[in-house]
Length: 96
Image (spheres, helix red, strand yellow):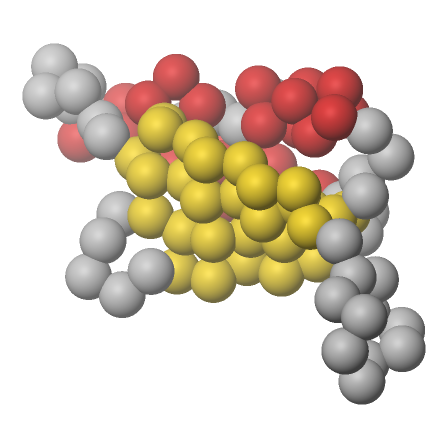
């Protein structure tokens, strides 16, 4: 199952620079691991925003939910999830 996921990060002002750097380091490691596993197929930064767009390839809604909740920045994110289906006019056979 493919999902478009937009994640906007809103950090609270009470976090120290060190806390922010620690969370970002854990986020990077976790994100890279789920990419290596093939769960997150694509990851793009949105220019000019503290936000990104990802394409997740998972077995279920629950798996996606659990992966997102595992993100260290999850408590500070606004997340939009859109399920994707292959378009019948697509010429990319292996992209589903």
